[in-house]
Length: 96
Image 1 (cartoon, rainbow, N blue to C red):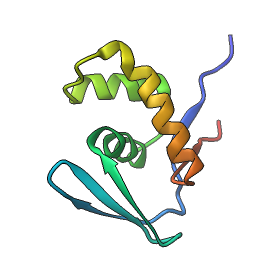
Image 2: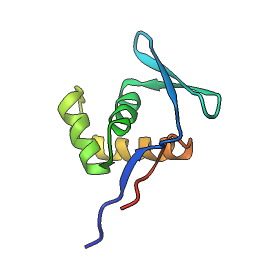
Image 3: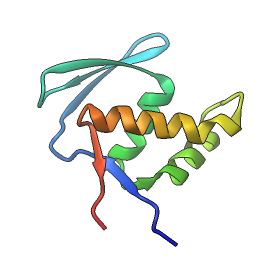
Image 4: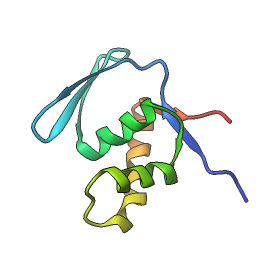
């Protein structure tokens, strides 16, 4: 059985956060890009900033800490968020 892939925040990234009413503005000091994230995306990125996680552990964290109306949709949402954050260079695969 193959090991599950783990992710972490890119250690080169320096993020500056500002909370708005229903979302977050995040400035990436390395690239100079400003992002606007909803609560779910911001939560996933914040959890990855604290350590290495698999998709499954991120999904568990989301279900434990956020009020998600459809828990069955969480794994695919987390996978989509990881793909987006990885494409932006904010997260990366953690080396084993």
